[in-house]
Amino acid sequence: MLTVTSLRKAVPGGRVLFQDLNLTVRNGQFVAITGESGVGKSTLLNLLAGLDRADAGSVVIDGTALELLQDDELTRLRRDRIGFVFQAFHVLPHLDLAHNVALPLVLQKVDAHEALARATGMLEAIGLGGRGADYPRQLSGGELQRIAIARALIHRPGLILADEPTGNLDPETAAKVMALFVDQVREAGASVVLVTHSPASAAVADRVLHLTRDGLVEHG
Ligand SMILES: Nc1ncnc2c1ncn2[C@@H]1O[C@H](COP(=O)(O)OP(=O)(O)OP(=O)(O)O)[C@@H](O)[C@H]1O
Ligand SMILES: [Mg+2]
Image (cartoon, rainbow, N blue to C red; front, side, top):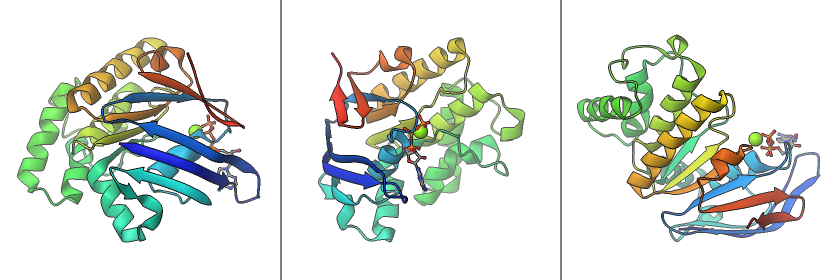
Protein backbone atom coordinates (compact mmCIF):
# COMPACT_ATOMS: atom_id res chain seq x y z
CA MET A 1 0.00 0.00 0.00
CA LEU A 2 1.18 3.48 -0.91
CA THR A 3 -0.11 6.51 0.97
CA VAL A 4 0.80 10.09 0.08
CA THR A 5 -0.31 12.83 2.44
CA SER A 6 -0.13 16.62 2.04
CA LEU A 7 2.86 16.44 -0.29
CA ARG A 8 4.45 19.72 -1.32
CA LYS A 9 7.19 20.32 -3.89
CA ALA A 10 8.58 23.49 -5.43
CA VAL A 11 11.17 23.57 -8.24
CA PRO A 12 14.60 25.01 -7.37
CA GLY A 13 13.53 28.39 -8.83
CA GLY A 14 10.71 28.54 -6.28
CA ARG A 15 7.60 27.75 -8.39
CA VAL A 16 5.28 25.39 -6.50
CA LEU A 17 4.41 22.28 -8.54
CA PHE A 18 1.97 20.92 -5.99
CA GLN A 19 0.99 21.34 -2.39
CA ASP A 20 -1.35 19.29 -0.25
CA LEU A 21 -1.24 16.43 -2.77
CA ASN A 22 -2.90 13.25 -1.49
CA LEU A 23 -3.00 9.76 -2.99
CA THR A 24 -3.70 6.22 -1.78
CA VAL A 25 -2.88 3.17 -3.90
CA ARG A 26 -4.07 -0.14 -2.48
CA ASN A 27 -2.13 -3.39 -2.92
CA GLY A 28 -2.52 -4.67 -6.47
CA GLN A 29 -4.21 -1.47 -7.66
CA PHE A 30 -3.23 0.05 -11.03
CA VAL A 31 -3.36 3.87 -11.08
CA ALA A 32 -2.68 5.98 -14.16
CA ILE A 33 -1.65 9.64 -13.88
CA THR A 34 -2.11 12.03 -16.79
CA GLY A 35 -1.38 15.74 -17.02
CA GLU A 36 0.16 18.32 -19.31
CA SER A 37 3.89 18.51 -19.96
CA GLY A 38 5.79 20.24 -17.16
CA VAL A 39 3.02 19.92 -14.57
CA GLY A 40 5.19 17.71 -12.33
CA LYS A 41 4.37 14.06 -13.11
CA SER A 42 7.99 12.83 -13.27
CA THR A 43 8.79 14.90 -10.18
CA LEU A 44 5.95 13.17 -8.34
CA LEU A 45 7.15 9.70 -9.39
CA ASN A 46 10.67 10.54 -8.24
CA LEU A 47 9.25 11.55 -4.85
CA LEU A 48 7.29 8.28 -4.62
CA ALA A 49 10.49 6.36 -5.41
CA GLY A 50 12.53 8.26 -2.85
CA LEU A 51 14.80 9.57 -5.62
CA ASP A 52 13.97 13.14 -4.58
CA ARG A 53 12.77 14.65 -1.31
CA ALA A 54 9.56 16.63 -0.83
CA ASP A 55 9.44 20.04 0.88
CA ALA A 56 6.66 18.82 3.17
CA GLY A 57 4.24 15.95 3.57
CA SER A 58 4.61 12.21 3.72
CA VAL A 59 5.10 9.20 1.42
CA VAL A 60 4.44 5.87 3.17
CA ILE A 61 5.18 2.55 1.44
CA ASP A 62 3.91 -0.54 3.30
CA GLY A 63 4.12 1.29 6.61
CA THR A 64 7.53 2.88 6.03
CA ALA A 65 7.63 6.68 5.84
CA LEU A 66 10.27 7.65 3.24
CA GLU A 67 10.90 11.08 4.77
CA LEU A 68 12.12 9.43 7.99
CA LEU A 69 14.78 7.32 6.24
CA GLN A 70 18.47 8.07 5.81
CA ASP A 71 19.77 7.97 2.24
CA ASP A 72 21.22 4.45 2.60
CA GLU A 73 17.95 3.12 4.04
CA LEU A 74 16.09 4.77 1.16
CA THR A 75 18.41 3.08 -1.35
CA ARG A 76 17.72 -0.31 0.25
CA LEU A 77 13.95 0.19 0.25
CA ARG A 78 14.05 1.24 -3.40
CA ARG A 79 16.20 -1.77 -4.32
CA ASP A 80 13.96 -4.28 -2.52
CA ARG A 81 10.44 -2.98 -2.97
CA ILE A 82 10.23 -0.68 -5.99
CA GLY A 83 10.50 -1.25 -9.73
CA PHE A 84 11.02 1.89 -11.81
CA VAL A 85 10.51 2.18 -15.58
CA PHE A 86 12.08 5.49 -16.53
CA GLN A 87 10.94 7.94 -19.21
CA ALA A 88 14.33 7.53 -20.92
CA PHE A 89 14.95 3.78 -20.48
CA HIS A 90 18.15 3.99 -18.33
CA VAL A 91 19.35 0.73 -19.89
CA LEU A 92 23.09 0.37 -19.31
CA PRO A 93 24.91 0.33 -22.69
CA HIS A 94 27.96 -1.66 -21.58
CA LEU A 95 25.95 -4.58 -20.13
CA ASP A 96 24.38 -7.26 -22.32
CA LEU A 97 20.60 -7.70 -22.11
CA ALA A 98 20.67 -10.59 -19.65
CA HIS A 99 22.88 -8.61 -17.26
CA ASN A 100 20.73 -5.49 -17.68
CA VAL A 101 17.61 -7.43 -16.71
CA ALA A 102 19.40 -9.30 -13.88
CA LEU A 103 20.81 -6.11 -12.35
CA PRO A 104 18.20 -5.65 -9.56
CA LEU A 105 18.82 -9.25 -8.44
CA VAL A 106 22.58 -8.76 -8.50
CA LEU A 107 22.15 -5.64 -6.34
CA GLN A 108 20.12 -7.79 -3.91
CA LYS A 109 23.08 -10.21 -3.86
CA VAL A 110 21.09 -13.06 -5.40
CA ASP A 111 23.48 -15.81 -6.59
CA ALA A 112 24.81 -14.84 -10.06
CA HIS A 113 23.74 -18.09 -11.75
CA GLU A 114 20.23 -17.84 -10.38
CA ALA A 115 20.02 -14.15 -11.32
CA LEU A 116 21.00 -14.89 -14.93
CA ALA A 117 18.63 -17.87 -15.11
CA ARG A 118 15.73 -15.70 -13.96
CA ALA A 119 16.75 -12.95 -16.38
CA THR A 120 16.79 -15.47 -19.22
CA GLY A 121 13.27 -16.59 -18.29
CA MET A 122 12.13 -12.98 -18.16
CA LEU A 123 13.63 -12.27 -21.61
CA GLU A 124 11.53 -15.14 -22.96
CA ALA A 125 8.41 -13.76 -21.27
CA ILE A 126 8.87 -10.41 -23.02
CA GLY A 127 9.49 -11.95 -26.44
CA LEU A 128 13.26 -11.47 -26.47
CA GLY A 129 14.24 -15.07 -25.72
CA GLY A 130 17.72 -16.02 -26.97
CA ARG A 131 18.91 -12.40 -27.12
CA GLY A 132 20.48 -12.22 -23.66
CA ALA A 133 24.00 -11.83 -25.05
CA ASP A 134 23.02 -8.90 -27.32
CA TYR A 135 23.76 -5.32 -26.30
CA PRO A 136 21.26 -2.45 -25.98
CA ARG A 137 22.63 -0.72 -29.13
CA GLN A 138 21.36 -3.71 -31.16
CA LEU A 139 17.75 -3.11 -30.06
CA SER A 140 14.84 -1.05 -31.38
CA GLY A 141 13.02 1.46 -29.17
CA GLY A 142 10.19 -0.97 -28.42
CA GLU A 143 12.62 -3.74 -27.57
CA LEU A 144 14.57 -1.43 -25.26
CA GLN A 145 11.36 -0.43 -23.56
CA ARG A 146 10.54 -4.10 -22.95
CA ILE A 147 14.02 -4.55 -21.40
CA ALA A 148 13.34 -1.60 -19.09
CA ILE A 149 10.03 -3.21 -18.05
CA ALA A 150 11.66 -6.61 -17.48
CA ARG A 151 14.31 -5.02 -15.30
CA ALA A 152 11.71 -3.16 -13.23
CA LEU A 153 9.79 -6.38 -12.55
CA ILE A 154 12.41 -9.09 -12.16
CA HIS A 155 12.85 -8.73 -8.39
CA ARG A 156 9.05 -8.85 -7.91
CA PRO A 157 8.69 -5.46 -6.21
CA GLY A 158 5.36 -4.65 -4.57
CA LEU A 159 5.28 -1.20 -6.17
CA ILE A 160 5.98 -0.41 -9.83
CA LEU A 161 6.48 3.20 -10.90
CA ALA A 162 6.45 3.76 -14.65
CA ASP A 163 7.08 7.09 -16.37
CA GLU A 164 5.57 7.16 -19.87
CA PRO A 165 6.95 3.69 -20.73
CA THR A 166 5.49 3.69 -24.24
CA GLY A 167 6.03 7.37 -25.03
CA ASN A 168 8.52 6.92 -27.86
CA LEU A 169 6.76 4.05 -29.62
CA ASP A 170 4.37 3.84 -32.55
CA PRO A 171 0.76 3.17 -31.43
CA GLU A 172 0.82 -0.50 -32.41
CA THR A 173 4.08 -1.28 -30.59
CA ALA A 174 2.96 0.86 -27.65
CA ALA A 175 -0.21 -1.23 -27.31
CA LYS A 176 1.82 -4.46 -27.39
CA VAL A 177 4.33 -3.22 -24.81
CA MET A 178 1.53 -1.95 -22.57
CA ALA A 179 -0.31 -5.30 -22.79
CA LEU A 180 2.90 -7.05 -21.78
CA PHE A 181 3.41 -4.62 -18.91
CA VAL A 182 -0.16 -5.18 -17.64
CA ASP A 183 0.18 -9.00 -17.88
CA GLN A 184 3.41 -8.93 -15.91
CA VAL A 185 2.25 -6.61 -13.13
CA ARG A 186 -1.10 -8.40 -12.74
CA GLU A 187 0.73 -11.71 -12.50
CA ALA A 188 3.03 -10.27 -9.83
CA GLY A 189 0.08 -8.67 -7.97
CA ALA A 190 2.05 -5.43 -7.78
CA SER A 191 0.64 -1.94 -7.23
CA VAL A 192 1.30 0.41 -10.15
CA VAL A 193 1.54 4.15 -10.64
CA LEU A 194 1.82 4.77 -14.39
CA VAL A 195 2.39 8.22 -15.87
CA THR A 196 1.09 8.39 -19.43
CA HIS A 197 -0.17 10.79 -22.09
CA SER A 198 -1.87 7.95 -23.91
CA PRO A 199 -5.64 7.43 -23.39
CA ALA A 200 -5.20 3.81 -24.54
CA SER A 201 -2.64 3.19 -21.80
CA ALA A 202 -4.74 4.96 -19.18
CA ALA A 203 -7.71 2.77 -20.17
CA VAL A 204 -6.07 -0.34 -18.68
CA ALA A 205 -5.87 1.27 -15.22
CA ASP A 206 -8.24 0.74 -12.29
CA ARG A 207 -8.22 4.49 -11.68
CA VAL A 208 -7.15 7.50 -13.75
CA LEU A 209 -6.00 10.69 -12.01
CA HIS A 210 -5.24 14.00 -13.65
CA LEU A 211 -2.39 16.08 -12.22
CA THR A 212 -3.21 19.78 -12.40
CA ARG A 213 -1.96 22.88 -10.64
CA ASP A 214 -4.64 22.18 -8.05
CA GLY A 215 -3.38 18.67 -7.32
CA LEU A 216 -4.64 15.24 -8.37
CA VAL A 217 -8.19 15.12 -9.70
CA GLU A 218 -10.00 11.79 -10.08
CA HIS A 219 -11.47 10.92 -13.50
CA GLY A 220 -14.77 9.12 -13.93
N1 LIG B 1 16.21 20.63 -11.45
C1 LIG B 1 15.25 21.45 -11.84
N2 LIG B 1 15.40 22.78 -11.75
C2 LIG B 1 14.43 23.63 -12.11
N3 LIG B 1 13.24 23.23 -12.59
C3 LIG B 1 13.03 21.92 -12.71
C4 LIG B 1 14.01 20.95 -12.33
N4 LIG B 1 13.49 19.72 -12.56
C5 LIG B 1 12.25 19.91 -13.06
N5 LIG B 1 11.98 21.24 -13.15
C6 LIG B 1 10.73 21.82 -13.64
O1 LIG B 1 9.66 21.22 -12.93
C7 LIG B 1 8.52 21.12 -13.76
C8 LIG B 1 7.98 19.72 -13.69
O2 LIG B 1 8.86 18.82 -14.36
P1 LIG B 1 8.46 17.31 -14.58
O3 LIG B 1 9.61 16.67 -15.26
O4 LIG B 1 8.01 16.72 -13.29
O5 LIG B 1 7.20 17.45 -15.57
P2 LIG B 1 6.33 16.33 -16.28
O6 LIG B 1 4.93 16.54 -15.84
O7 LIG B 1 6.93 14.99 -16.02
O8 LIG B 1 6.45 16.72 -17.82
P3 LIG B 1 6.58 15.78 -19.15
O9 LIG B 1 5.18 15.33 -19.45
O10 LIG B 1 7.07 16.74 -20.18
O11 LIG B 1 7.52 14.67 -18.87
C9 LIG B 1 8.97 21.56 -15.16
O12 LIG B 1 8.48 22.84 -15.40
C10 LIG B 1 10.47 21.53 -15.09
O13 LIG B 1 11.02 22.51 -15.93
MG1 LIG C 1 7.91 13.62 -17.27
